Image 1 (cartoon, rainbow, N blue to C red):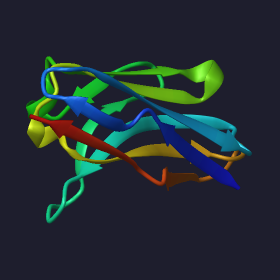
Image 2: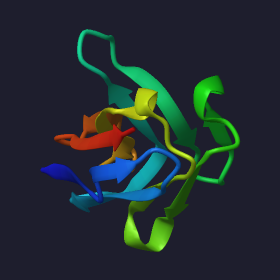
Image 3: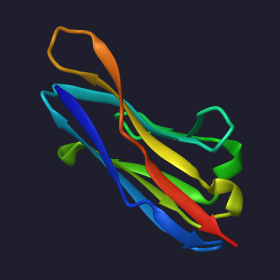
Image 4: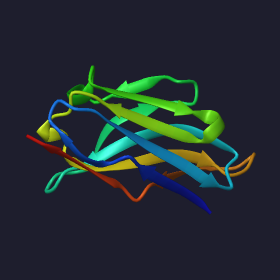
Length: 121
């Protein structure tokens, strides 16, 4: 069994900063892509940022220059540093990871339970 557990969400004022963390645990051979998605009320889940195993990153246009994704492969952890947050960043943030549990073996996509981020004016 593999679990992704997020932490670091909460209430933050507009213009402030917040750091999200997500730890993967369980039987893990390798973790390929890791990423953060978010879903605001009444909207579809969208990609915020993603990072490959070699550190290549990808960001949604709406967060470029404000958010930074990083990972610690030794700790099976991905982070999202959120700076200069805006009210439109309010959403539930979900961690996502593509994980292989054996070699040779398939890669499966896993999701965390989500952490609420609320930005106040």
